[in-house]
Length: 434
Ligand SMILES: Cc1ncc(COP(=O)(O)O)c(C=O)c1O
Image (tube, rainbow, N blue to C red; front, side):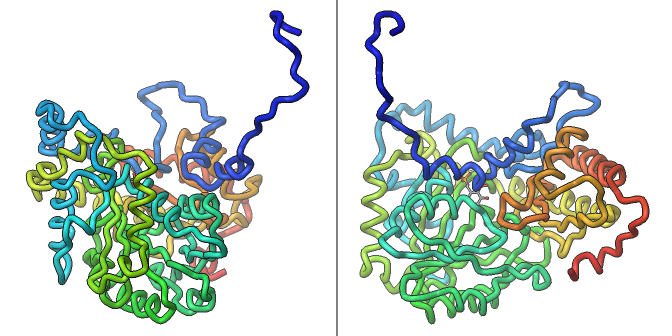
């Protein structure tokens, strides 16, 4: 007995075991492991180079638009947004998002098609929770954004993976997708522009995805959090364009295009001119889940109409131009690193997937080991492929200041040289074919 308290035989509480394994399925969890052995000395001459994240907001060249800041400051100062908002979100914000997204669609969305969430992450949570029913399964892309896996599994859904094909610009392997589906398959996910692959899908490919979804009797969850961040030959086409072929739930946020992931404002949008989501009550289930979850801050919701209306095209053009530049730097410099092969030049989002040839390296056991040592020895943080379901690949973020990117890729190269096997010469094409 301590401090006079009565003895307890055993505590009744225990952790939720389902949660304990989920850290391995989150980018933040894996990056935590990668950085665990890294000692930051704070030196200006050798700063940490963060090439593992999807948040470039700390770099001055990626600072958000002044109009966006004014919109939020104005909403706060107005004193009109201090209350709880409706669970689906404030009507003016929903209307303004519906008009913003309708610009790229062959039909008009209404405010009632839009549900506000705390970032796109909560949109994923809501959709996975709203869909989960006994025996249901969901089709996810591999490589992919494992947050979907974590949320689906946590809600008791079965997860099945279809492949993205690196040789075809990471297109969906529609045959493997079809083979996976059965009567209990409810939906498939596509991420366009792609995380982690940096790919952008063509109109034709998205049309085929929609036809396949229709054939299988499932709907498409289109994660378009990187919408409009494209800098190659292909324009961004929203999946909602095909909403009359198969119903589409579009998920998005202001996190990436406005470079404000900390503002936590996202959305779920029903792209469904035939009203299938209403008939099947998917919409009711989304609303019910929103009734029992937290909302994005009301003043950020209040700022949305001004933020969308006032942000100048020059701001978006500037962001895309920096990404085009940094994607070029990354592509060119990676060509000079013999144990790394990049199947295709990134055309969108902030990332590129590269294959690591471990047979060229000594003393490195796998992608995680590679990234941990790289962080420890070179202060360069890169995401191991295991965090996106692709072992022994790496996901490299190029959304950082160009000078830092040069520095980071130089350090990556000297790390690879240091661990290269002395005798082995690596033919990059051969490596990729394996
Ligand atoms: C594919 C994808 N979906 C969703 C999210 C979450 O977005 P948000 O920051 O708006 O919650 C991310 C974040 O990196 C992402 O990469």
